[in-house]
Image (cartoon, rainbow, N blue to C red; front, side):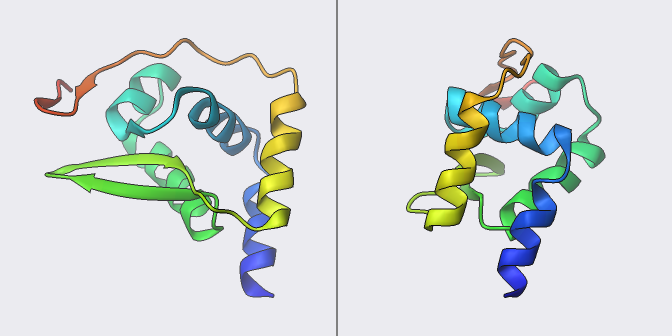
Length: 108
């Protein structure tokens, strides 16, 4: 039941909903890409990503010193339906600003 409650709590924040939609739309991105795209400081963004990961929505792939976040797959029915609902929302997303390269890392 704890993971279910974490999942529900994670969805109670507009920024986290936007991050989920952004990652669903663009695929795996590093923190630098998300930071630049959302214009958000790293500590605040990292907190949102941690909450989403602990709630079972995100996976993290380590590539050298860089961490790439993406929508977790497979997902249980609740999370999958939540992502499907988020896809239907009219959410103004920022444009993707790539600051990281999988070989060179981030330029931040």
